[in-house]
Length: 84
Image 1: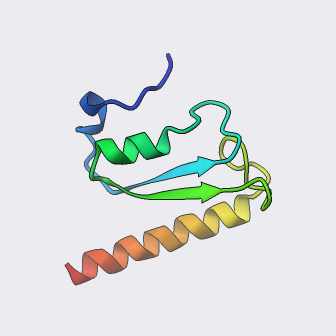
Image 2: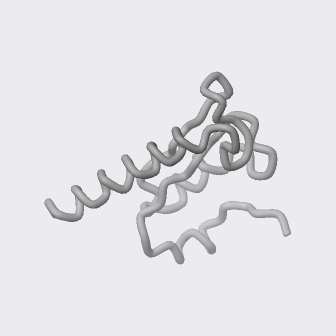
Image 3: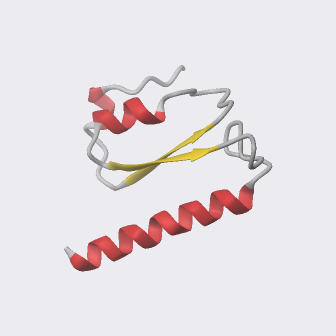
C-alpha cells in the first residue's frame, strides 16, 4: 500500500509530530511538507542532507545527527508544554 498524506488520515493525529525529510528519500519523497500542511500536529519538518551523510530513508549513515535533532525537538516540546 502506498502512503499518501490526506486530510482523512491526518485529522486522526493527536500528538505533536516531527516530519523527517532526508535528501534522497526512497519511499515517501516530499511527503513531510504536505503532511505538515494537512495537520496542526506536525510542529516541525526536520531536514537532513547528503552532505552530512544523512540522506535516504531513516538517515541510516547518520544516526547521531538524527538522534540529536529528535532529542532537541523533544526538548522543545517539553519546554513548550511547561509554559502553556
